[in-house]
Length: 330
Image (cartoon, rainbow, N blue to C red; front, side):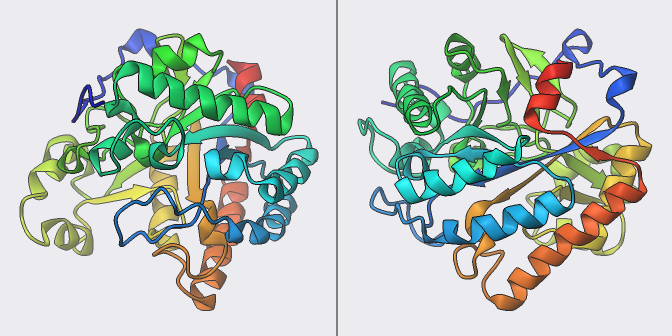
């Protein structure tokens, strides 16, 4: 049931890059991996389908609305088939700007024709027919729950594969957001994104909106070769970050300090970035479900991170863009 592992996602050509019109300005999006709860320290388990953290979603959504931020909710099978979660998300999209997309966690998404393990947790490693069947089950579940077919997709664990985009295009998807530039998951059987940067591009009939990753520090101009080279050296990346030489910053409140992330946003904007793509996991909205939000203090810090980031983006003149607004421009 496994076709490929360690897929190296190719670098797009200049012709594939999105040329955002001047009227679009400089914008940012927020994609939320809306998913079940599971113990991140333990092996994956098909029985882990609890969705209790969704009770915190309405309050979090109100906080984002207060800052004029739409959420692109990338939901997986346990969420799409849980009536309480569907009810919550149905109220969320009544704001007129938030939208439902899909996120594929293969280990909890039928059909179950593969063993559960690290390699098969990356959906792009599965044979074509099985990956397609899982996408179909998820897409149909979202359609039944919300009355429309989703337009955006994310592979859980960023597990894109060489057939994924063609499968999405065949099913009417417009956007994929499975690429995480600067990260290499080959050690776990996953894909390698180190050839890419964070700019949006067209490929295989799909627009790819990567999560934004920014390299900061005095040696950031050499990040493409230097950051991978530091990986085998124990604590080398941490030392480079502490010395202000090189840091890899993803635009997320999860394990990314606000000061460092604001600095990364400024670097990206000064370099001419036109669309910043932020992300987080929905179980982080309640204490105790992810390594990033373990207790009430972490949760308060999480919400404070977003307040500080929203204020900074406003000062820099960066407006939020909903998925629909991005698609209208594209």
